[in-house]
Image 1 (cartoon, rainbow, N blue to C red):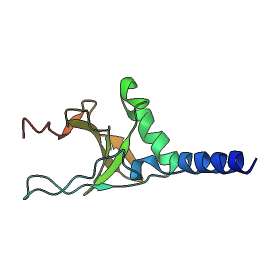
Image 2: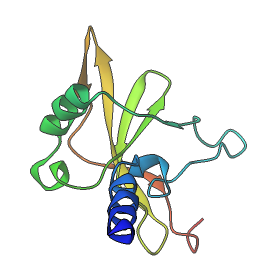
Image 3: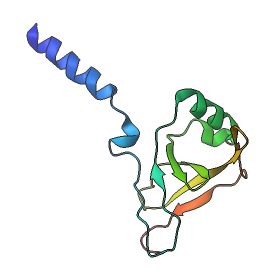
Image 4: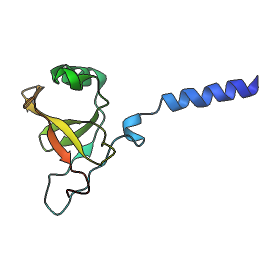
Length: 114
């Protein structure tokens, strides 16, 4: 009985971790002025829901890593097995955030292209 309780506790604690900060999201490095630095951030659930609702339909249900850069928020997916990644940019508009354009931007290129 103790083993069952301990196993359940371990499984529940694993589900409670913030997956974006436990290895699923890429932390991008600033490379000699080629890009603006981005920081991996946690968003309040209400803000995340509002931003997700602005994304194109195919992107709303994907796993999203949130980044802050300057005056923008970026919704990025996980890197593909080839190493590439894309995301959507949100601009600050008064007290809210607005999707800049419906097409994704490149966040990183596969190593063969870099």
